[in-house]
Image 1: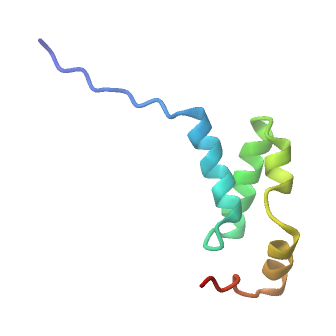
Image 2 (image 1 turned 90 degrees about the vertical axis):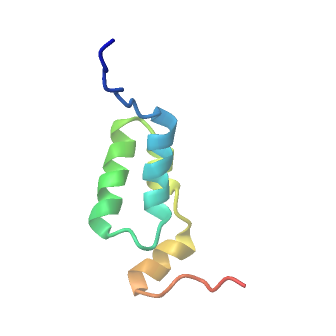
Image 3 (image 1 turned 135 degrees about the vertical axis):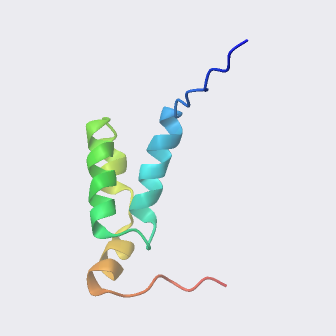
Length: 71
């Protein structure tokens, strides 16, 4: 019997979830966010690409402020 390498096929829902999380992750660069947004738009997830981040998060990013402190 010969060994055949298993080809991994990523789950589409998990890929989309990864792009959505990249938009909300404060450690993600602006280039990374742009790439994630572009991929979501190409895959038809318009609402997720444009409205996934809250307005207060967008304002904090524009002003260069850190995320809220959690207790």
